[in-house]
Image (cartoon, rainbow, N blue to C red; front, side):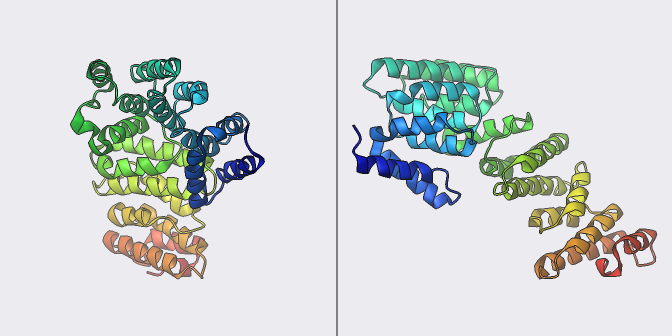
Length: 332
């Protein structure tokens, strides 16, 4: 039985799992892990009672280090459903592999092997399931690893591939190119930093479209993270001189009501042509007079494009933009 004082603390900590402040949320996860088994029933109840993906993932992270067999059904179900939460579920099952409850340990092993060998599962979930088997006998890992590498098309089971999360990044990136985006754009942006430069331009264009869709549907707090990822993908294309996603850059400028990440304007600097004059003028027209830096960046980009394309105030493109947005929006 949980003492009233402990129940109150657990209740307060569980509420903090939904906090917008990441420090508060991480502190609650750490404290719940210390409390351990006494918090499991409450955590499971919260997971059942919410549809909030971030809160569900936070609950799973709190359950991960506890290693309680009561979390087994939830971890199995979550692993089968895929996504970011499934990666955490794999780590819960890894903890349960060491459980003194033999039934729970055997069930956890079966679930992880099944996920690693499931060709229909996300690549990153399969890699996470394989990583969770790292403490298993070499024979088990070797058999699963050979099958996994053959299916994925890139080495995930070898020691070099697994070092520093290389296999996880490769799986995350391959899933993203297939249109299977994570809930959290942060790890994907990290993966893109080293992989976008060599991806086919057409694949990056499709990924930009998918990321824009997630950006539009995400909670307001996460929108800027998706936008930063989209800007990084644009910059990767621009560094190769590719204009395959230029339409998205133009639309982003036309609709911007707040500053965009620097990567957007860096991309326009690299590949912008006369078709960018009107979108840049639109962005300047919509920019707040208080945002001096953003207006300065837009002006510098506009002038750089006009200079490269040899567009003067007498050019038809400039005249049309001036008529539409006013002369102050084209400081050329």
